[in-house]
Amino acid sequence: MSFMTIYERAPIGSLIAWTDGTRRPPKRTSTLHPEWLFHNNRGRLVRTQGERGSGDPGLCPAITILKGDFTEAGVVANSSAYTFHIDYPLQFTIVERPPIGSVRVFDRPGRDAELVYLASNRAEAEHWAMVEGIRYPDSVFEEVTADEVAADLVEGRMA
Image (tube, rainbow, N blue to C red; front, side, top):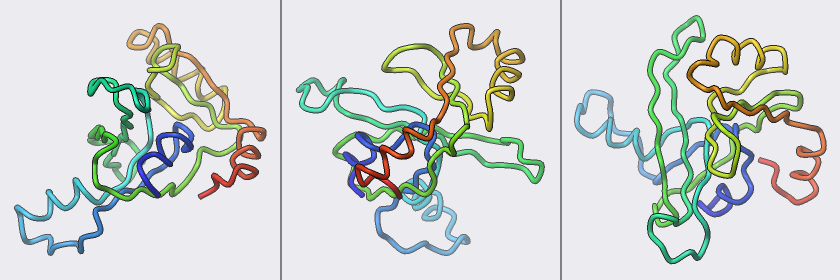
């Protein structure tokens, strides 16, 4: 899929893979492997920003994807945010969409809000907000509904 397909149609919270189409170098090549991973990886879509055709480079369409390294217990050990702009020459794929009933927790209301947590249900989201509330006092919840998933299916946006 193109950048614009992800920008316009992928729901926030989706697991997105991206690639530049090159083959994976051997891990022993210490300089090539990290560079390859930057251009060929996957992560969670946490933000879309900018406007199509705005003419202002600071407002051009961009997506932010958070890649996390997880321990065996499922805890995020390290995370990196990647922001890609419209002219970045990569191909994207929606690997997984947020399941029905899951709850997106955004850092603030509004169009430029960023996903800070994807909870499996409302109770988990509320518990997370109690624990992390000091860092995100303006957090906003948004439930993934069956209507949203059905609209994706009808409009041909399913992965």
